[in-house]
Length: 113
Length: 112
View 1 (cartoon, rainbow over the protein chains, first blue to last red):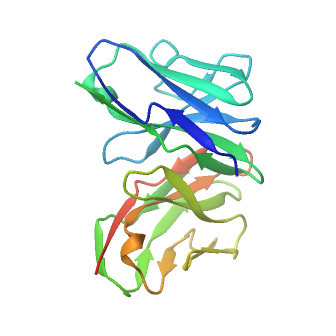
View 2: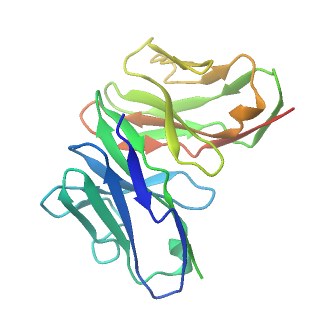
């Protein structure tokens, strides 16, 4: 399976600032996704990162708050903008491989003070 | 819509005990079903999967059988170890989609 690396692995940020999370895959993948895991909760899909075009966002998530880039088939970024404590979560990059299996990065744990 | 309902946790067991985590789903068509595991401080890992009715997924001593008649995909392990302490997520993927719908997760703690 692809090796998925996320940076940063964790960060503590101040309210009102923005943070960009990077996801690097060691092979070309067609589909990449960003998920959020709020404390003690399950995973929620934020958006599908589309190569060379705008991301496809799920209900409840908007581009202004979570801008996503995907310049090529191995890399994507997720920015959490104008952060508030409610944005404290683990953000996970995932890729689709093989017969429809999703693989995940180790996640970026974000704490907003 | 699609949804996954998992047994609520937390679950605390002794080593070598039998573990069952119930998972039922609601979906149209014939979804694929998955169990993911999240060890402390780590990301999600695919544990096992089943893509059609009566399929049995297995890995690391864990098993789950896709039961369409009961819309279930219960996870079982006959003899747990301390290293099995983790959060377990049941998930489904519709046959015409790539998105996963996750259950709430079940925290399992195994004591020596």
